[in-house]
Image (cartoon, rainbow, N blue to C red; front, side, top):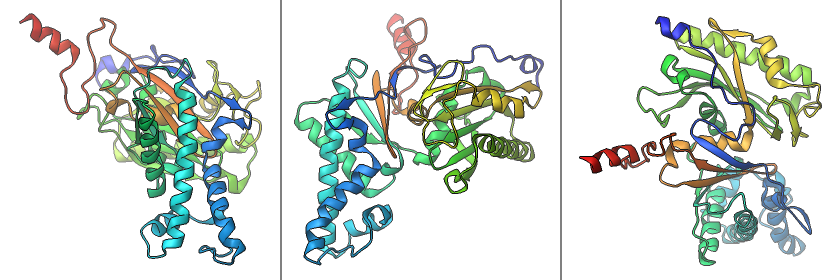
Length: 379
């Protein structure tokens, strides 16, 4: 390792839940909007779709013609529903299409409300992530929502997140890291914490191939379905530490230059000191306690990676999933993410220019940067 790499420090690391990250400003995240029926996000969650599907089955159930028989709506897999959409059973297909249409109307209503808030003003594109997106019915609902909004003169693009939602939450962690990390190292550790699962990954930056991190990939990941084990909070931290140590060993064995950095995606409102203000009620034990600090607990278990002290940045899970799209959002100024899962995660971003106001990253289709354009104009 070169001498200058050995003296690299963790200066320039963003604080937990930061509003300013290396490539974007986080204008808002985890907004909780209410209407007369309660939290708005509940109208466009995974559970909301199942409830809608159940309502469309009810009249058929009464006449004994429910194509799904007695199977509860929440037990029917996305794979089964996707197969029905293209299958020969027209009645079953019609039920699913009806549920998609109603859900799209709900998602359009919720999106409309977000777009009318000050924090989401002038949003040009919305990326939709979360487990629901990872299905044909999810993709149809997203496309239908965009059509509804455009018919109402909302100038908004709605696109499914391009990476698998499980990987997006790990890849986004790269955008929590300071740029010096990519010059000195080729990989980081990432953690995606959810109400059901905790996923850890070894993420290769691909920085030498693409400075915008568009070639990054998850080379190894490990999943723990903690909801099945119902561990204590301390037990969960212990298991997470063990998973990360396993990935550190694996990185060494495979010859990766692993950065002394861990990026964490976690539900809830993340405070600058690493504590969680609210929104972590589905995690094992009380994660919202003022006496609990996940980054500090992990640093206790993993004080160093390689020859350097471990640095950790934790942010909201919806934010981190959205950050995986940063390289592909350079042709717009303001964009947001909605993640459809147990609830509705949300975040709004503004792309950052360099301090001189001229330099922008390349867009996905290779448009000139502002810097190059200015130089060309001069010549």
